[in-house]
Image 1 (spheres, rainbow, N blue to C red):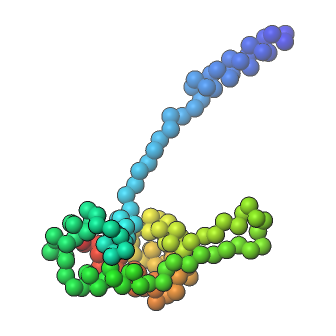
Image 2 (image 1 turned 30 degrees about the horizontal axis):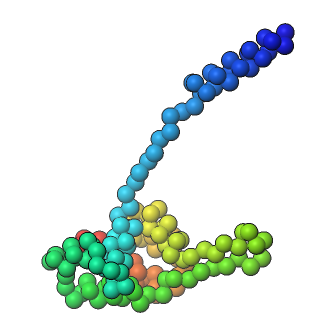
Image 3 (image 1 turned 30 degrees about the vertical axis):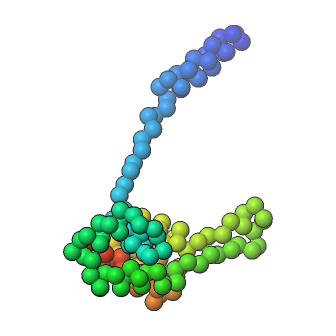
Length: 140
């Protein structure tokens, strides 16, 4: 009787391995807002020469208006860190506002959604200026 139970359990285990697991799927999505932010960030004078700069400087969008916008992004105060003092030492990993902003850029489809999700993470004046820069650079 014990041998039958062992065979039955082994059979169930083998069936579960062979037929019970689903094939893993990977979903890759494109975030237009995050791609726009990354593009504008790479135009900064703080970044070394790159393909984005070459493309931008050789395009029709290389105007004073857009240069002022990406320079304004450098001056925005969107880089803050939140510490969790009351947590144990191993859980005191700080959270950067830029990580939350990037997450919200990925999750949002429109600028309006992004502003709603990001409200309160950075000061409102910074959020409105940041959103304006991203929306102005979307066609670029």
